[in-house]
Image (tube, rainbow, N blue to C red; front, side, top):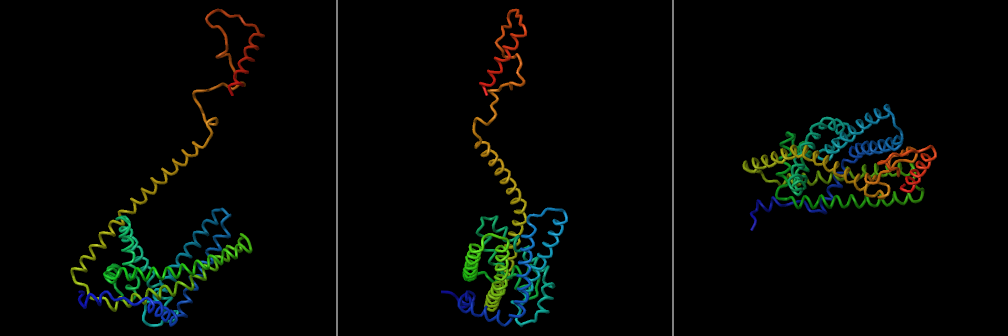
Length: 345
């Protein structure tokens, strides 16, 4: 029978209540959330339209402009995502200006958290894939912890794993439900865009319409998804027992080992990708050669001389005894050899 502490440790907010409280959190922060999300969605739409209108143009100037636009787009997207995390995870309902400033304040720390988390999860994927999935869920709250508790990057990552430990399946199941809801709505939008394309036909206008629809979808789902994660985090944080020194040390060692495996795995993955690419290219070349008809392929065993370059070599001339040929004989022999070459071809 479980002890009271273990029962307390395994408690997680019910699914129905989680969806409801996430909506209430989003509603109370609607102005700031949708203002930031609007910038995020607008960046997606404008970047998509820019790439679509320039896809058939090639020039050095355009390449430089594209790189600059991509950098600006990346910064705007990362900033808005960081600001949205701050707006959803904090306890108070801060105005847009405060959230926008914190988007820059937490920009690099959250970028660092994402990089380190990816390295650790990559180490799990290198180690038979399944550990990578488990670690990815365990580190999902690192950014929220960093903003909420104002601790270091590594401490946020370690605490996130301890927060989920013992409740992994409950957290994983709630993430899956959220994803199913999002994908169901996305599927409806995809079907709607397919219907629009079927009615007006394939054109730049239909593709731009699709980009606009997807951008608006991001404006709607992103605030709610982050509020969902924020509510789940706060519930886990309230019911999380204090970890022992031994658990903390063991957790630190675990994450360090997988981060090292992830760092080592990067060149290994790159090397394997290069080898696979080379083998694939060679196989494609071989299969392409095999598809050529045999009559088209070179055959060194059956070489012939072009009639235009015909010589007396190989002609039916007895070389073991003196031979006197006049001009008519030579022309006849050349004509005979040319006919043999044409027959061979």
